[in-house]
Length: 144
Image 1 (cartoon, rainbow, N blue to C red):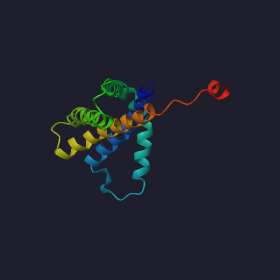
Image 2 (tube, one colour; image 1 turned 90 degrees about the vertical axis):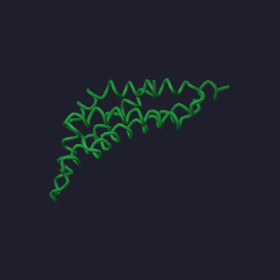
Image 3 (cartoon, rainbow, N blue to C red; image 1 turned 60 degrees about the vertical axis):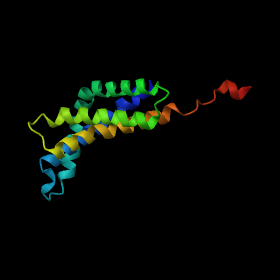
Image 4 (cartoon, one colour; image 1 turned 30 degrees about the horizontal axis):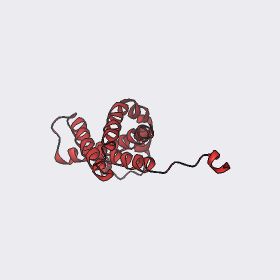
């Protein structure tokens, strides 16, 4: 259950921000020298945050399920699992977002791919760290 919560908290938040960055880099948003560009970007991000969670819920849960299934295969180590999740998320995100505006350039394909890869690998790594922690001793064990 922790794995799914980690993916749900990190995935849409970080993925939405990276998609926004990839969209603004492709549209040459940063070519102007206005100092308020960063504030406009952050305001837009926080306005779109509920939509990131609304539309990112199902893809993130799918990646969490894939990560959970692979984690039960004992021959596959955590690094290989993170690589598999990252590759799947890279191509899913790149394919989904880069073809929305027509024929994508290579840089757009890569930027949108990294917007899926980074949150998926980070979520997989954090969930691996949480799952491998030893359980905390209960109060009853301390009393005896």
